[in-house]
Image (cartoon, rainbow, N blue to C red; front, side, top):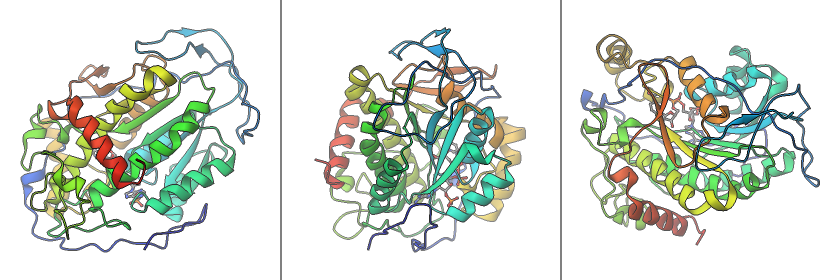
Length: 397
Ligand SMILES: NC(=O)c1ccc[n+]([C@@H]2O[C@H](COP(=O)([O-])OP(=O)(O)OC[C@H]3O[C@@H](n4cnc5c(N)ncnc54)[C@H](OP(=O)(O)O)[C@@H]3O)[C@@H](O)[C@H]2O)c1
């Protein structure tokens, strides 16, 4: 049932997909909101790699250092760095993940672990993006298999790299699916991959983040405007709604329970939006439970509407043709992959973005700002419930 992946090998596992026809434009809902911004600078620090954890990361030129992260923004002070930061990015084989990996690797200040389900695709993507090969490593991770997630964590630990930043970026979106498809353990695929796979990964890697002596440790979970019903885009039907979580609590298996979190009929577009709400709730719950104790910055973001990425691969051809120009010329919310990568790289590395518990967005003046989450995506009680139900499903509680 489950995939036992060897480190650094491509996946041979694929998930059956069903019913990919008859889409409508009802879910043309990834509207962007802003223009560009640029990566400002990366962290450096004054620290040594802890004994007992060898690092493959070399020393680099001196940089500035920041004080320990706190709830408020942290000023840069003037100390030196001894090593690159090490960041794990899931789904770095295309789109936002690849653009972020490239932006960080090109600075020479980061070693990027590209955690991808298709090793060869990731290798080709990194090469054709011109990423300096000494600044990245590809490791196999299939978020649709809990065994693969656990195997990745083991392999990562064996690699001896420190974990300074974890970016949960990968996602699947099945807006045209008529029937649900499922992960190796039988969870509906979108929530199983985007939320449950990442939830297990980040829970397991929290200890590794805690052990990092990097000056700003971060766990970033990519969110979306589409899960936020306080926006125009979030109000395009079908709207995100987790309800009372009855479907999630029963395992999302489509047999004994609905494949949808709220227990309703399957809708692929809604399943994606629901998974993004879970992502944003999870980030806040991490913040409440662990920020004060660990100093880790927990953040989410909406990178803008990157209308050209593979996320839309399962949409109807007409949508894929019209969506980019629609975003460019009508909503003017279009963001290039390169620009979105700079934004996420900023959340990874910018010394001014250390505030924890924040959902970042970018405004028309190309500046990052703390955006407001919808009522559901900021519901404290729901966040606690999503956390506890997910723990039970994954055998963590
Ligand atoms: N595009 C937008 O407008 C937009 C807007 C808001 C938020 N986002 C968010 O941005 C993030 C990246 O999306 P994108 O637009 O860059 O789409 P993308 O190009 O399709 O990237 C998604 C990545 O996730 C990977 N992935 C999918 N299933 C996986 C699995 N089971 N295990 C491991 N990796 C898996 C894909 O791997 P393969 O290459 O092997 O398929 C791909 O690398 C997502 O979280 C999405 O929700 C995107």
